[in-house]
Image 1: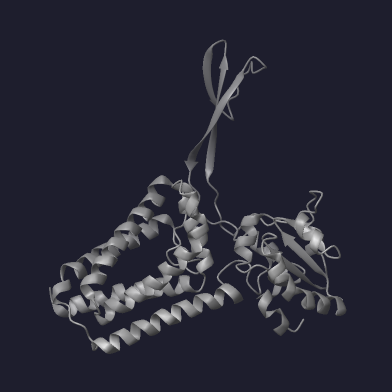
Image 2: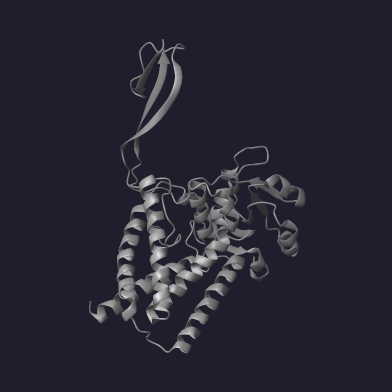
Length: 363
C-alpha cells in the first residue's frame, strides 16, 4: 500500500481519537455516568465508584494515542494498544446495538450524540483503518525527533489532566446539555414538531378454567370477569417512530410532602436561584463556601430554592431555605458539579455556574 495512503490513514485515525477524547475531556463526569450504565447492564456495579477515574484515564489515553499515531512515536506499541481498544469498543457498541439495552454509547459525549447503530458503524470503520495501521506498523517512521515527540506527548498529557481538573470544579467549558444557559426548561420538555412515537401493541395473558388466553388491548373477551387470572403482558412494537423526543423528559419539582410544584416555581416573575445538589454528601466541605454567597443573595432579596434528590436532610442544614425534591438522574444531567447554581427567570436559565465561581457572578 502506498506510503501516502498509510500516512493519510494515520492522520484520520489520530484526529478521530483526539477529537473524541477532547469532547469527553470537556465532560468526564458524563462519560463516567455512561460507564456506570454499561457496568449495570454487565452486572459490574462494584466498579461504579471507580467510573470517574476510568473516565479521566480513558480520555487522556484517547488524546495521547491520537497524537502518538500521527507523529509516529512508539508506533508498534500504540498500534497494538489501539487495536485492542477498538476491538473492545466495537464489542461494546455491538452489544449496545443488538441487545437494545443501551440507546447511546457516549463515543462523542453529549455534544454529538450517536445512536447505537451509528456508534457501531463508526467503530467498524475505525477497526478497518486501525487494522491497516497495525499491519503496516513496521514500515511507519516517526515524523519528528524522539525528544520532540516526548515533549509533545508530555504537553498533551498535562493539558488533558488540567482541563479535566478544571471542568470537574467549574462545569464543562462547552455545555452541550439541555440545561444550558438560554434554554427554557418548559420548551425543552415539549414534543418536537414532526415527532412520531413508537406504535406498541399490548398483548395480555390470562388464565381461565386452567386454559391460558392471550388477547390485545382492542380485543378483550366479551365475558371478561373475575374468573380471568392475570399472568402477564408483552408490549410488541408494531411500528417504530422516528426517534424524535423532548430534550428533557422527567424534570419535576416535588415538595417534601410529595406535591408537584414545578409549575408554581416556573411561574415566578422575579429572578430566582435553583441550587442543584444531588445529595448531602460532603456538605460540610461545600457549605463553607456557600454561606457568604447565601448571605449575599439574602441581602439582595433574591429567592433561592434547594433542589435535591435528598431534600429532607438538606433542609435540616438550611432551615430558612425552601427545599424541593427532584429525580437524581435529572440532577446528574443538569449539574455536573455539586452544587450548581441555576439563575432562573421563569423557566429560562439565564445563568449557570459551579459553587466555586459563585462569588464572581453579578447577581
